[in-house]
Image 1 (tube, rainbow, N blue to C red):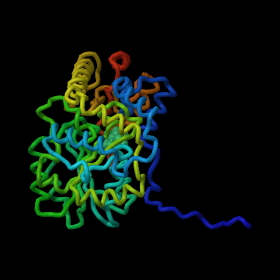
Image 2 (cartoon, helix red, strand yellow; image 1 turned 60 degrees about the vertical axis):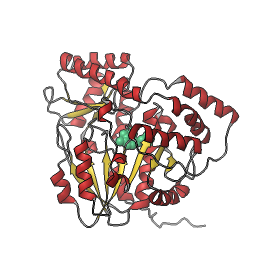
Image 3 (tube, rainbow, N blue to C red; image 1 turned 90 degrees about the horizontal axis):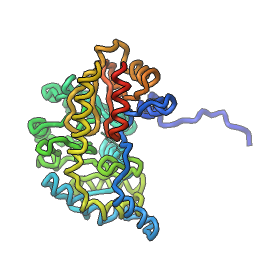
Image 4 (cartoon, helix red, strand yellow; image 1 turned 30 degrees about the vertical axis):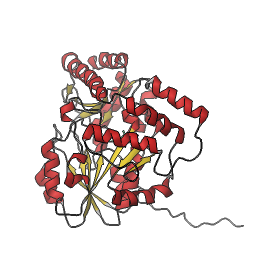
Length: 387
Ligand SMILES: Cc1ncc(COP(=O)(O)O)c(C=O)c1O
């Protein structure tokens, strides 16, 4: 058969997208053997109890497809946590679906909800998958800049940017990359704004349990006017320190979850079965409240050490395992150039903040991930002190 010269025609909605900054900085860290505080993953082991349960189910099974929405025991465990931590019960039968990480849940929500031309409000800096995923489904991201340096919301701007085309608002608290939390007033403002509309909410709450002050732990689930229109997304990668398992979930009222599952069943159908069983056994006895304390201790140590022993200016973080640092006293290089220099010349890998924005922004800020062993953090600190 003669070879065809016809050009290959693909969707093209993401032709402008390049390798993510996380892959880029991690590869640079490996190449230069730098202490890696770039990508958001822990360098300490998971709880042996959970690994034992995983080994057990790897030996005895189940090794065949899990039920499409996920293992029922696992779904029940997650719904129970939502009730105990956020006083917001979901029905394990029809208001939750287990996904291949939070990323797949986010993609599936957008595929379920977004049509060509729909506008989606996104607060930036933002986790990197929101913008391209909205565009993949023909949506139009509308950016709302959080106010540097406390990354608070300008609610007047939100009101101005809402139009009859606004289909969805994506919110993320605890927030990656700033580590800041939405306060009660933020949720109330949003509640008031959407009350008489059919605007949907995608609440990315993957750091839901990584909050330093338990009294500040809040979820969109606790606000009735928001809950009834929200897809809430969580990640076991963050909660049990196993990002490589790629297991997440989505909670939503039954009418919304029904539509979500119609898409989910064709995207992935179902998720790793033995690991869901292991998590179903493990979660009811896991101490999730302690997570906030563990990361607070690391945060407080790093914040003080950076302030006292380096010329970096740390910004306060209230949750997640990220801390932003201002390097404007050290250099006027762009964020990307400085992050590369820090990795290559000083042996510490970080993430520049500018790739979390759509428009060019350069506040001379880097993100550090402190979900690391104390020895790793001390090694990074002694290198940062030399800069
Ligand atoms: C805000 C936010 N959302 C979603 C994700 C993706 O989570 P998962 O690894 O479960 O897909 C991450 C991971 O870093 C994140 O920081």
